[in-house]
Image (cartoon, rainbow, N blue to C red; front, side, top):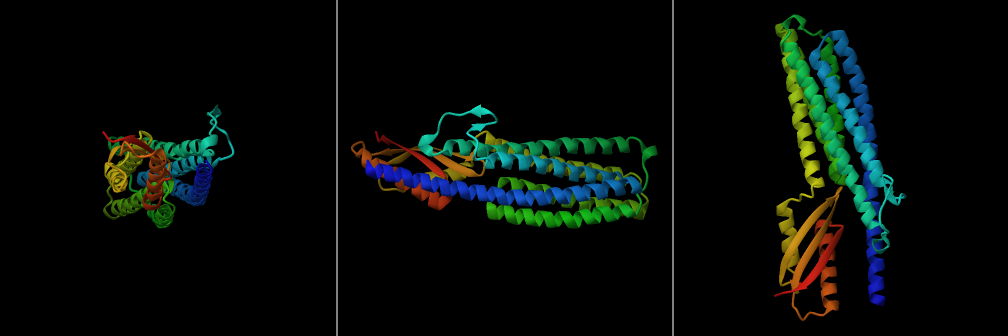
Length: 325
């Protein structure tokens, strides 16, 4: 009994350490996302102003794209804020059963899902804005009388947006890899798409000015909208799959082979991995010798859990042993 209590205390200490590490990563992600909001806000204001002054629909579409960046980043910040709120004992006002046995682990893992939820909302916002931009481009092409060549000053707005967005993308990508944070990864994809659309806007405006093509501005705005749509669908797809409890089968197979490699394991009956925000948990059923003592099967499960944590960074592996038939 003493050994069991010591083990539970060790598990709680390990969970607390992992929880604090994940919360530190979320704090780091928050700081980067605040920088994103400032960058997007500055660029959007500049581009909207220059689009009105210079009569450029492409630059206006790019400004809308950066406006979507502000909205999506704020949504990600809300998701991270909820995931970091470890002092509440409920979720959105709804109480959960007491979680004494795991020292709040169940509740915190549930909170981590909110980051994924708001990442998915980011994809939805991008899809909605892309639809608006594409519609505006089509409407412009269907009304040739309203088309005009943009003013040269609009190239300046697209150039500024390109430089700033490339810088934001590089910072987001580096931090996302370092912190292994889905929100920053989504923000990096968003900022890269923004940089590419700004480059495309600059080329389109330059082409319209050089060749006096009134229709090129509308076509370019549609292409910008299509690119935003593609990025939004990708973010929505990945985050919705995580929420639907989908996990990469190839990675699950690596987990399975790891567990099957232990001497006491006859075979792996079942394995299911789950995403909880950015952290991974695993439910595992192994077949062992029918005459194995309970204490030995318990220790085997602990050894597998420790190996999964060390090799793959799995936060919690719930191992169930059944007799091999």
